[in-house]
Structures are given as C-alpha cells and as structure tokens.
Image (tube, rainbow, N blue to C red; front, side, top):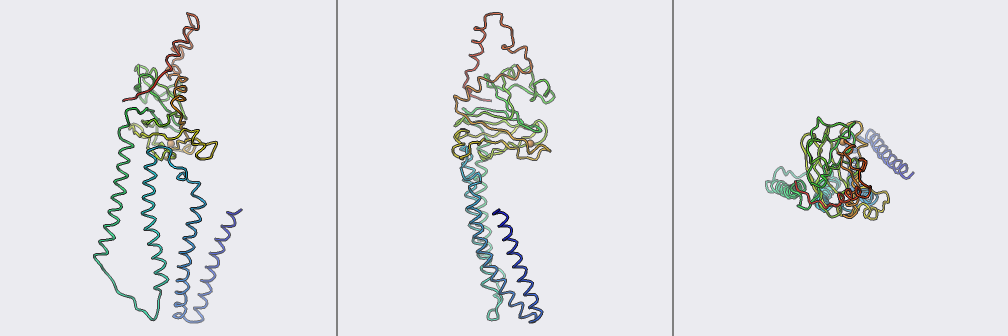
Length: 359
Ligand SMILES: [Cu+2]
C-alpha cells in the first residue's frame, strides 16, 4: 500500500512540474520570448535547489529503509570477506565524498549563477594547475584502490595455509557437486569422458586410480569447518558457472577444463549466523553468478559451516563414491563370513580423520 502511495506521489510531482512548464510556455507566448526566458531561468534555478535538497533527503531515506536489508548490515562471514568489506567502505567513502561535493556544486552554481543583467560571464578557458590537480589526485586514489584490491585478490587466490582443508567444487547444468579427498588426502584422477550419471560417476572419476577409492562425492550441500581455512578447487562439467559466496564476500568462475582456486576461513557456523541475522531459516548460499542456461536461477547450493566435531561426525557418515559405483565392493553389502560384531569394528575405525591437506 505504501509502495502504491509513493508511486502516486512521484507521478503527482511530475505532473505538477509538467503543468508549470506548460503554463510558463503559454506565458511566453503572451509576454514575449525575452522576458519569459528570464522568468523560466528563475524557475529552473529554483528547481535546481529543490532537486538538490529533495535528492539528498531521498538518498538518506532510501539508505535508512534499505540498508538493513543489504548483506553489509550484518558483516562478512569470513576473515577474507572482512577485507572485501573494508575495500567497499573505503571506495564508498572516497567516491561518496566526491559525489556529494560535485553534485552540491553543480546544483548550487546553476542556481547562484543563473542569467543576470547585472553580471557578465567571466571567460576562463584554461588553467594548467587545475588540470594537473584533478588528473593527479584521482590517479593516486585509483592506484591506491587498485593496489589494495590486487593484494587481496592474490591473497585469496594464492596458496592456502598448510592446515587448510580442500573441497573440489564442480558446477554443472544445473547444480553443484562437491568432492572430498578422503583419508589419503589426495583427489583421484578424473576424465570428462568417464562422466556417467547413470552409474554414479558424476565427476568422471577414473576407477583405475586407487586415490579415487576413498573420495567422497556429495551434491548441493558442502560442509566446511568454522575457523578452518578451506581451499576450493573449482571446475565445471559443461559451461562457465560461478561459485558465488555472497555471505563470505567471495566469488570465482567455474571454467570447464581450467580449474580455479579460492580459499577462505569461515568465521561463524550456520547456527551462529541464524542468531546474527535474526533469521531462523538462514543458510549460506552458493549462487551461480554466471548466466549458464535456462535453469541458472535454480542453481542454488548450500554451505554448511559446522564445528570440527560436527564435521568429523558428518565425514564419518559419508561413504566413498566408489561404493555407490560398485555396490558389490562395499563392505556393508558383503555377507559377513565372520560374526557381525567384527565387521562393524573395521568400518568404525575408518571414520576418524583430521585432514591435513596438501596437494
Ligand atoms: Cu551456473
């Protein structure tokens, strides 16, 4: 309802302005061009000031109403994201200050120095010092911003800390597949021609490579650990996708044939973020940030940030994808020759793992 009211007011204001312009046009015909032009100048000068004030109030009101709905309102959820936020703020402060000063001058000068019979325009065609100042100052400001940005970029895409866990992320039309290296901390080889969704091989894992036997493959939900750096090795199975992690303030293209990497350290578990945002349904979302086809909108993945203990429990419950592709190799499916108690013991020891990943 208030939306409708706002639109109605805006339309009304425009109608009034239009009517005034129309009326002054008729006045021009009656009074003669010269006089009416001067009067129109006055009206325009007044509108310039009115527009400046209304515009500034509008910016303030929009910020008040909309800022709490933006992602900036509750801060970044990764230590790297904090650096992105600070870059955004520095950029916003610099450009915002310039914006306010130039807009104020633009509208004020239009009003203050409108046509007058008592004043003649001052001819001022060139000033080298001024040219130099407004070239050098923005150049320095831009250089500082770009250097900070590049430094952060190389940090996020560079080598991850030694204690980082690794997750391989693969985009496909239309969803996400995640692979964990398993107990050997090594991802098995894969080959795109081996991709076979019907036979539980969505990534094209090469079953001749033993390193594949313990690799865990899950779809749509990625588990990572709070305060533990995680390195993403990003691939695509078909077209270019993009791993968009807005809460962590990071994104990286998923390019077929060319793996990209990105690492970050989550600061809050999903549960903690529910409290921080005040949203009981909060989940960390992976949005595909690259137009990738007609199902692009539905390509939503989830990052579940948990504690180390919760992660260990989750990991222990996962079965290597090898067993999905070859159910007969799964120890759980083998008819126990010995009593049942013994076979469960061997599978239980497989669940303990703290991954120190290096690749
Ligand atoms: Cu996509």
